[in-house]
Image (tube, rainbow, N blue to C red; front, side, top):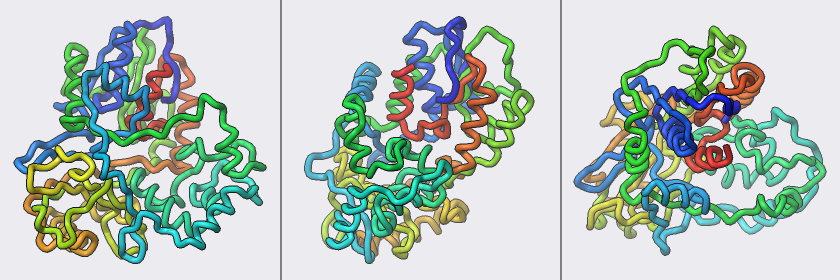
Length: 419
């Protein structure tokens, strides 16, 4: 979140009823604020939506959440049950030489990476350094290629070279350049050393989160209510949760510098494909684990694949297997233009190679997002800094979106709990 609430103003207007707008409205209403949410479209939830099919549920975007104790308590209070990953399905894979591996580094590469983790860096990291620069200093090239790159692709759908290290993973960047990565992590304050977040999913799908929030805010949400001009002279806190291009238009007259910076923010496009296979269609049996990520030089066009019904068995009808593959990202933006037949052919061909399927899927659900995930680049860093000094410098004018430092649902919830 960029900006701060004005405690003298007891009213809050929120522009946008995506997940960030709904979360903000819910939390502030609980705290006694008079909340109103304005949504330009005819539905709430933004990217998040669960489709019900005969074969099982299909998520249009995120299918699970990283959960800390605070986040789990939030969902308990919201009345949304969360499912943990099946005990025997926690494995994560990365492709190397076109084969799925739990540890993609060779023994020699693992030793080289460990040496770098424990060694003092030879050069300091600049504020504009990319995540690739950070990795080369603290982990080395093998880790960048087979660990960091696929990991980053799975979160941001772009490459480490595109991401600014400080804003994409601030907790990994030492403030003291003389410290090794091991010393930096070890010396964190005790309160910052938390248990590892657990992957969990809403029992009834991500739509249940949206529905629960919408039910608690049914009198505060105004659909089909586009906001074309902001009233900055009112006695109302204003929280803008819209994407960067829409935000640029809204604040252009009041903060042209920030509006110009926002126009430079890039988004990674994504095509999300949930495919339902029959169990007998896998030559070596259905995949077991959370999913697999794929480095860009492995010859696959898909970025990765989630093993939905392995991690969460309720995600497919008996006798079927649910998988979600992602295509596109910053390295393959033209994938968004593929028609349904072309997407189906692509998924069939690549999953036959990756998972040894005998036949194509019994059913496919396709979702396209031209602006799926903001690229946490130097351009986005410049936009965040401009907003902090400009529009958001005035108390009561806030930005809360997936480009304002909270790219995940977990991050959004934790930010709100700290307000």
